Image (cartoon, rainbow, N blue to C red; front, side, top):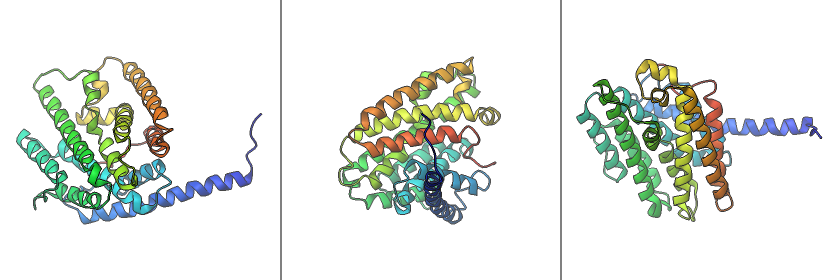
Length: 299
């Protein structure tokens, strides 16, 4: 039998969508204040109002049970990931400069003050300060620092792949490329989110949370690549479609990655239902989002 949808059902569904969008609107306003407060970090064009809105919507729909204060740090962590990606891909032309950029971010994550001429480090220092004030950081701070190191190392590795390819070296294979999926900066955000909202038992089974997040991150790496191929082709950015002869190879790989990720999430769900729901919604929302548009504004 087909379920009968009543006006009452539709009203309740629309009201819930409105509540989540209001949660996103509050996150967007905070992100726009960040953009305005750091003009030396967030360039006009790529960091536009639509980017702030897209980030806030993605996080609100991934964790609709949270309040704006709980999602503030998560939204800002996503913005830091975008800023790091922009600096590595578009503002760093020399390997020595890249090494300095990475060293600075890792040092700030370790608790050192940011250099005065490092706006990205100052922004990360703000995130570090907020996280360090959360009780769970005492036991989970190391997991976040490791996630920052992994993200920076992955972006640096991809930069060197692109540089070597310009000199005629072969590009990595698809498996090696996917092993570097931390360059998408998803898990580093998820770790910060769970520290912020996880509660007193946030450390329980945290290694399983990170493993599930990594699986989702690998799938989203290919979701992103399939959706942004034309942009990446024009800009010269690395994309999985550059590594294979047939798009269907990447599409089949994505199907397998999604299946493996959902298996991990189903295993996680009995013990950590909210965290499993967060990752499931993140995977679903982002997959739907990329069917129509991209996060970045036009440079």
